[in-house]
Amino acid sequence: MAPSRIATPPPSTTPSIVKIIPPAGTSYGDWRDDFYRDGYVVTKGAVPKDRAIGYQSDALTWLEGFNLGFDRNDKSTWKKENLPQSWKGGMYLHFAAAHEKYVWDARCEPGVIEHFARLWGTDELLVSFDTVNITLPKSIVGEYDSQPWPHCDQAPEKKDLACVQGIIQLSEAGPNDGGLLVMKHSAPFFRKFFEENPVSGPTPWRTAKHQDFHPFTEDNLDWYRSQGCELIKVCAELGDLIMWDSRQVHWAKFGDSDLVRTLIYATYTPASWMTPENQVLKKEMFEKRQTTTHWPHCNLFTHGGATIKVDGKDVPDPLDRSEPVAKLVESEKLLKLAGVIPY
Image (cartoon, rainbow, N blue to C red; front, side, top):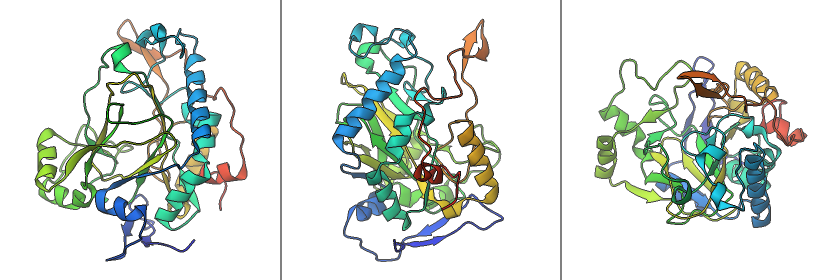
């Protein structure tokens, strides 16, 4: 596949910084024009609906398999106490959830890979070992202990397009359903925002491992609004793929419908961007069936084991596991996406 943009691989001294420059004045005549203009795009039918329905069923089977009382067919069981530990209401960072067979089957969907290949100009891609989201409706389970968290998933010094995140929709995401919120067209203002609002000194969100994250305040959102950016609830259908620039201001909202929000987070970047050191680390994380960040080729760290509170102290969650329930099939295609074997 011929490159559709100029991609400069990261220098060896700064392996996590990538500079992507779309050719000036380029018009692609497809969804990429919307992506570059708005900072996000919904690509239709990346996964056939029958398979997307099957993946959602697998996700709910996985959730029922904890045997805590949750039954997809009995809404009286849709209670927080019948669910394993999650983050922000439905993100499962532990339990080897990122490596369940249905998750890898979805990551390997040709329609998903094709969109990222077209965007990056190569089909030699890596994928993140990202989390899944199975969020029961607050109209049934009650309010979640979570507030809006506007943020971007890219460090301020990475000024240009360096990562594109994805959501594989396994449920509808209509206006009243839970889903992704974005500040439309905010990604192109990333550089200008940090020039006017520089980050200096240590911050509570920035660690040696976790650098590709920045939270925004309501005043920051007002700044983006002053640039003409508009808050949008992204609507999508079952089987669609949502893609957004990691510089885009975004967060999730809980829905007002009775729908179970079900999705897989999946990010792809060119395999050539990963350093030999990160390749060793990624292979090790794959073999241990660990969950990573949104970044496939760098910023590789795990969320650690699941814990629960006992007498006010964090102790290992007895429900945690180091192997998926449904074992994945380690095909050549999968192992290349995982960064285990080279292209």
